[in-house]
Amino acid sequence: MLIDFEPGDYVKNPANEDWGVGQVQSIIGNRITVNFENSGKKVINIENIVLERVNNEN
Image (cartoon, rainbow, N blue to C red; front, top):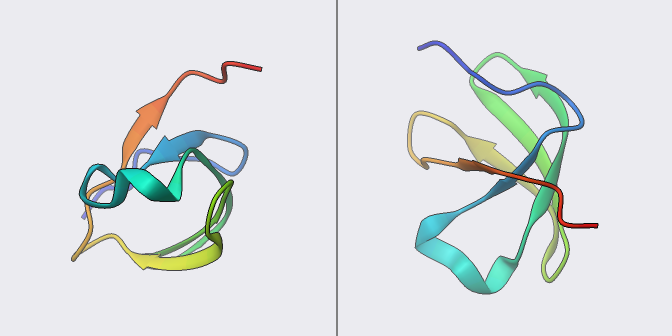
């Protein structure tokens, strides 16, 4: 699977909108570490969860 994100990108998880916007910290294999504003650091398996890129609103 092609991962179309880079560290520093801002993303959201449409299935968990309450997590808020997150910033990609690292990508290793199919796992992306994202620091979300409302739920902290999460390790996402990109094969199971679809992330959407968002513009940085800050």
